[in-house]
Image (cartoon, rainbow, N blue to C red):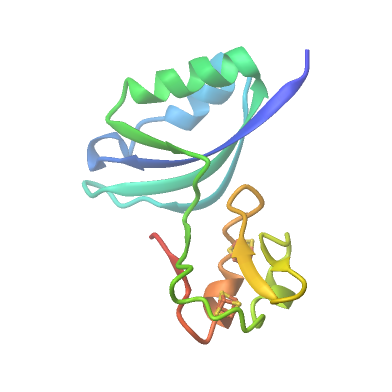
Length: 138
Ligand code: SF4
Ligand code: SF4
């Protein structure tokens, strides 16, 4: 059976910080979890940007399982915030983006756009955008 990958941003309360939620996802739902950013502090709100890979049914059930904890799941989002109002399409970030998540949308106008599905949250663009168009959610 073919596998799918869903990229999700988890926001959770401090009360679950010590619980083995990710371990249970891997063990009980046969999922592969790729954590590409995380900010976890005991007794404070935490964030985790992950790719969840597995059979479609298991991915859906696994995400449902996570929601039984005090976790908010934001699908198709990760921790990079691109502000199109601040972006002036200078192109400075393009050579620093390893996945082409920031790309030239229109060859004539050289307009830059952001594709969140390709973003791996490496934050290289945050350091290389002179106009503050890229920032980290956490
Ligand atoms: S965080 Fe990394 S992958 Fe995502 S848009 Fe910025 S440079 Fe590209
Ligand atoms: S460096 Fe910043 S302003 Fe320039 S194209 Fe990239 S996101 Fe837009």
